[in-house]
Length: 157
Image (cartoon, rainbow, N blue to C red; front, side, top):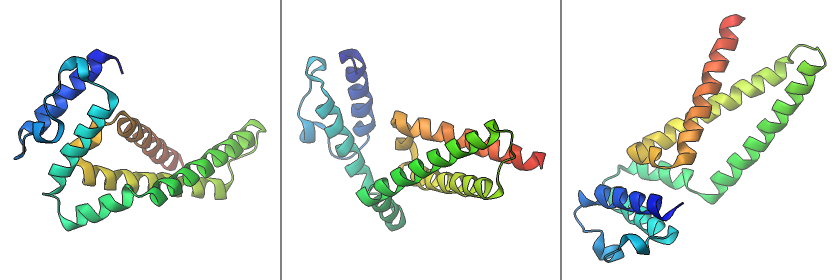
């Protein structure tokens, strides 16, 4: 991040936190634009999320505890790696002129449905905060494209 974009993000986070009951300055103190760094922004995000979580339902808190858990992140890393291997295998199959194997199509379909469900849960948990992270926006775009491709594939059958 450049200093300018960090300052812009900091002002955005201050704006989001201004609506909350406790002033953000009690958590972070007064911060000038030239003092902005990654840790300041990370601390503001934690403060913002922490204050907002006080209003979350038990279901939302429970789902957040799952999607933020290290084991969950590791599990999805393994699943994504497995999916990459499936894509490579499918590419090799198609390059050799053979038809797509049914088991590969079923696995790919299952994984896309899993990604879609996971995305829905994360949008439910984070709501407007979900789109603040570039990684989440990329996930949303990729899952939307994969879902549209899956629907188009099944419509062609």
